[in-house]
Amino acid sequence: MNVAKSGYRVFSANSSVACTELAKKITERLGVELGKSVVFQESNSETRVDVKESVRGQTIFIIQTIPSRDVNTAIMELLVMAYALKTSCAKNIIGVIPYFPYSKQCKMRKRGSIVCKLLASMLAKAGLTHIITMDLHQKEIQGFFSFPVDNLRASPFLIQYIQEEIPDYRNAIIVAKSPAAAKRAQSYAERLRLGLAVIHGEAQCSESDMADGRHSPPCVRNATGHTGLELPSGKQQAPFPGIELPIMMAKEKPPITVVGDVGGRIAIIVDDIIDDVGDFVAAAEILKERGAYKIYIMATHGLLSADAPHLIEESAIDEVVVTNTVPHEVQKLQCPKIKTVDVSMILAEAIRRIHNGESMAYLFRNITVDD
Image 1 (cartoon, rainbow, N blue to C red):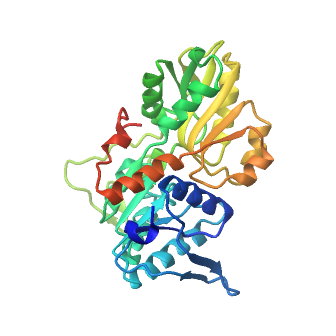
Image 2 (cartoon, rainbow, N blue to C red):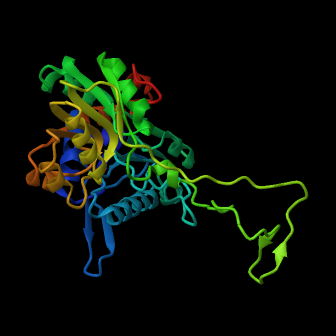
Image 3 (cartoon, rainbow, N blue to C red):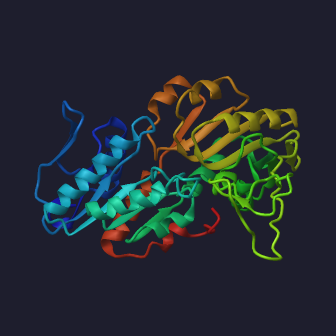
């Protein structure tokens, strides 16, 4: 395909090897050349982007992977490149961001902020007009954007890996490491025609428990017999007549249990993100105790930060399978249990369909909303 006549260009917004490799895989599938640009950090750590060719009137796709070790720099690279293309009169600027950063900060916690919404506003202000991403942490994040968002799914690739690379996968059972992950696990189980198990009673507080950090009224009712609410000055404010606030009972997690029979089976834990692996390691130990003889973890985004590779290597986990939405080459060198599934095919097809004005429904066939 002639790049000059194709009407669109593909650029890489990151000079890292992982992002460049993903960009090259995508452009090879599309039959186009990677756009000429330079992304680097100056001596004062400021991000600089130089676009080396004309983009006037073109539709531009910016591919940006987000490394877990340097998230904020990757965001600035994307913002600066989008703004550079906008001021160079590009017609449309579409971000291909397989893993959308700050997606876990999509709910209000105490006096914090919804950072994911802030990032969505920043991208729109920088000039992006569309985003292609994969397996957002919460589907509702799409509502933060003022432009279209295509949230692709990695489950077909992970299911294919299970069918082709796990011997005797028919003897496997899909496991949700918490009740919150049960819907995703059920989707996998139904398509693979396998059983479902759920681990209940995690020691750690789940994300939903921290979604609203307001602790008023207090959990314990004042025992001194005061009839009003205490003010900073020491005075009391009388409550509304006839209204008595109920006691807010604190949550207590039950002992860890596994709902479902995993004895003598292969346990496959599925999730969207694997970052801090403490929960996964604890789940693997419980499944081993319950009789599972092999344990796999399937996740879309392998952030694997901190000492995750070391913990996986010493755990009961047999294999961790993630996609190449996030660079993790260093982690693979530290832990041979980590395997990678390439999803560049679906990203390239999404780019082609968007450019040609074709329907995206084909990419979501046989995929449920809960997936």
